[in-house]
Length: 183
Image 1 (tube, rainbow, N blue to C red):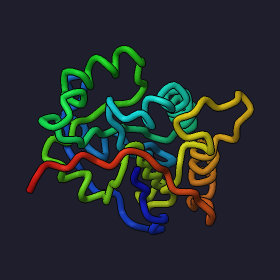
Image 2 (image 1 turned 90 degrees about the vertical axis):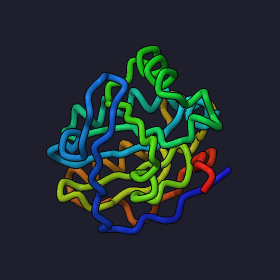
Image 3 (image 1 turned 45 degrees about the vertical axis):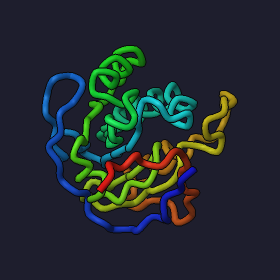
């Protein structure tokens, strides 16, 4: 299990141009929303991601409706973890009807630029492209959440969209470590 560091408020979003499961290449500008942007590092095989994926899809739709851009990036080494291959990314994005682009970071350069640590790892930026959220989806992790569970990621990103600032108190995400390629 891996856990990211606390939010480093104000860190600028790193640009990228990555291929997506929809056949397009997406840049940071393409995915950015008028009121903020959420960049998520996820993968296909991680039990933490699998446990939250349905909530994540719902929450992403909520955020997109509020003017927040959303994109997911898979940076895992598909050689060591074939479940995270591009072909399997395409299948999973279709199966789960991802409302956001699902991008492949085969070189792992984007994950390194963001300082991604685990899957899932959330990076919430304000409209100016400054990091304001580095917390978790919610308190339930990979377990089923009750319908009335607080939606920490959504609440934090709505605050960012409204005020430009994320909450001072944030609980880091936890999940499987990014599967880095051997040096």
